[in-house]
Image (cartoon, rainbow, N blue to C red; front, side, top):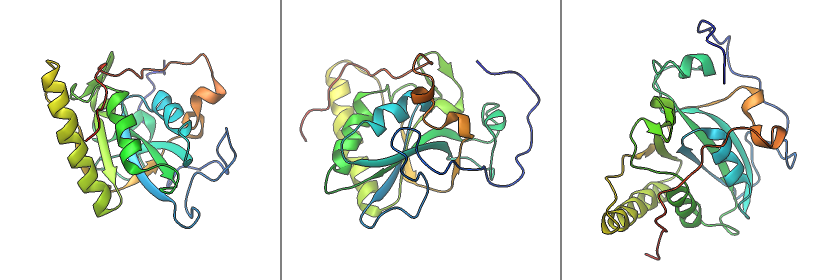
Amino acid sequence: MFSDNPVGERQGPMAVPDGHFVHQRAIQAPFPEGVEVIYLGMGCFWGAERLLWQQVGVWTTAVGYSGGNAADPTYEQVRTGKTGHTEVVLVAYNPLKITCQALLETFWENHDPTQGMRQGNDRGTQYRSAIYTTTDDQLLLACKTKKHYQTQLFNEGGKTITTEIAPVNGFYYAEAYHQQYLAKNPQGYCGIGGTGVCFSPT
């Protein structure tokens, strides 16, 4: 999919597009008053972002890298696995129109959170499942929903969830061509696929 060029150094923060390709709203703060942000990693961020921007109540989305140990990484650096980042979607949402609970249910149902450092045929640290939170309430809810979904998976003969859950510690926007990639390239690769186990009411 991408060339094997030598890993390059990013010269400072990545240039961020002025607006979202689909709805033209800003993809970086400041966001409107009341809008909250959570970061969700579901494997390749192209399909995950498309899924999430389509949710009613989501104000905007962007893709980037989080959970690693290097500042301002490039895609070429992240894909080596040496920076420790995973691909995530920044989800800015209006909690009066869509709850964090609803977003997390979408998260659990639409990828396989039991695969460790991969998602389907995509292998590497950048494809691991992750939830990075910005509030204490989000963190508590992420842990609660994980426990609930784990019980459901075990009841269906599923495996142990490997999703990383933690307060966000750095988010770096991905290159402009990654932003809303599947809106620009409708026939592009999408690795989204769940376990087939629905998230039942808690």
